[in-house]
Image (cartoon, rainbow, N blue to C red; front, side, top):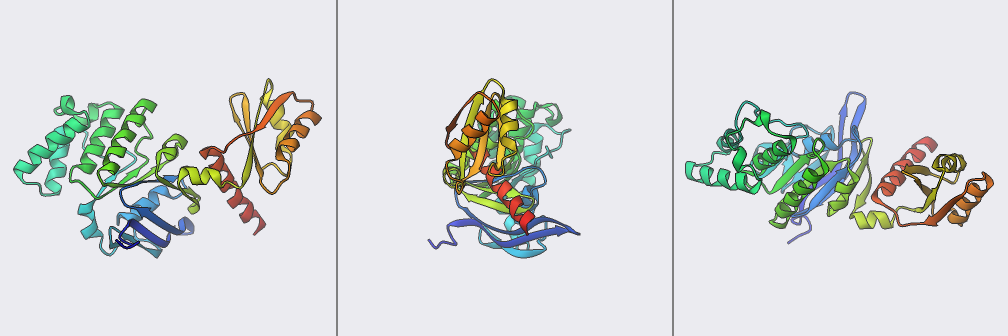
Length: 317
């Protein structure tokens, strides 16, 4: 198998502009097959726009992309039967039952009668919807709607599944159960591209791209990204985190101060010597009693570091 065959998605210089707004800027992307690849970024970072370009719903302003060996958007018609797409908002027919929605999707993909019945029964069971098969979709709970949307997206057994913030409206347990289903699909050979703004979800991806205002600012396995932040992370805990934050926020060497309950996470570039001593001296000088220690980077630290680095480069330009 060649390197190109091993990639479900390959994009170079992918750009999309809406007038003067550049939603996605010169994106290079390689998504390996049979893996879960994540897009992490806040709203407006270009995640949804990228997904829509990759499935042929939007035409890039420039750049190129190959998805499952096909050029998009040129070969979008040939690509559509091979992908599944789950939008951020529930987009099925709320006045149809769960089973009727699945039958509608089966019609789109021209299932024969015997195959249709067997496959619909299979996904209803797999996604815990058998008891809701005759319930109108509009009356389902948030988690049930999510499972129905996923069942519809995978009904035709797509090679590639594109998920646009699929868990934004459900509770943590439902999100955890949903991710269990995604791992089952990836284990069976489905490639999954999923966008999220949840750090814990991004942690679960085999590989991850971080987007900030349309630009890819980091790409790698979560463990790789955490090992290469370019930052020393100092955690501060004390009785008065607000005073500690005031003591540290004004220092030029401090890139970021983030409060997590009674703890602070301080990011200082690796190029700054003796970061721990710097933090302790700043706290002592301000009369703040607190403990400080160097800790491993979290994925949230990575996100803060790469986005702050990008904005500092823009400010210097």
